[in-house]
Image (cartoon, rainbow, N blue to C red; front, side, top):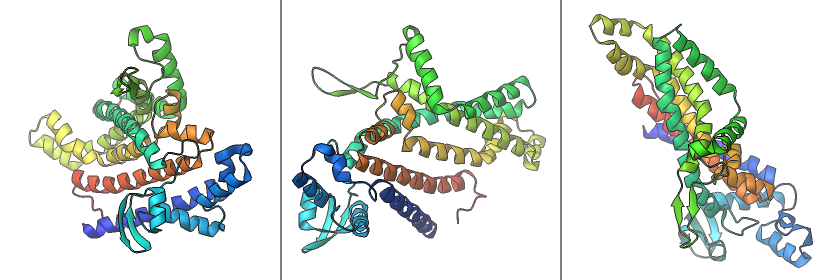
Length: 349
């Protein structure tokens, strides 16, 4: 099991290495970030200092080495760098220290805050949104898929298939606009749901944050539509395949009830492709539903990234892309072990 985990981690590191190269070439290898920080009005001395701080006075290959050193959890830094960048972790050595640290994603051009702090402030909102969307998709999708399989070639089956095709075909950004307009504006007096809003509000008197879960409903429903449709279709197809196998007929021959055969025997053997869909979609939603968060004004990784792109705040964009890639890698590793737990026939070696 340990060897398998190490193998998966090595694959993940290779994927992240490729992402780092693409991110650097896209956002820092071209253009002048110092100008993006100050605009065209910055004086030459200030621009020179910023270029030195961001290593822009070095050749491109050195800039890349410094960038990798910053974002790597294992790296080398001088005592001056550790203090200046306020690095967090364990440091061993003298003048140049071996660092085991929290990856340093640098600072926002616009707010001067650490990118890690900016992303961690937005991440809880995206986690809540992704969990809520997947909860809706799983709780509705699996029973609908089972019902469609059991009632094959009936109106229930046809309705489930047609509806799921429509759900898969509808772009999330379009559904977000429709749902926001219909339920957040036209029917607001009946639903009580706001058109836009984040997962928290701030008390004007105390300045404290408090949860506003009603703002979660519309974006969660919007994000849950496509995974709901896919989970319904996958569950239906997988159940139809399993229900035709010999062990199901044997279970019926032993006198087991239909509900027990379906829920305890057929469903467990039909869940592998469903788990693939759930983990894949959860990773995608958790990585940031950019347009949906932006349309609903919901403060998550997606909205933070879009806002940063509008402001040319590339460190935030680069950090969010790396965070998204890390989430994909970790969830894919987790999904391999879930397959083995659900179906012992699956080997993850």
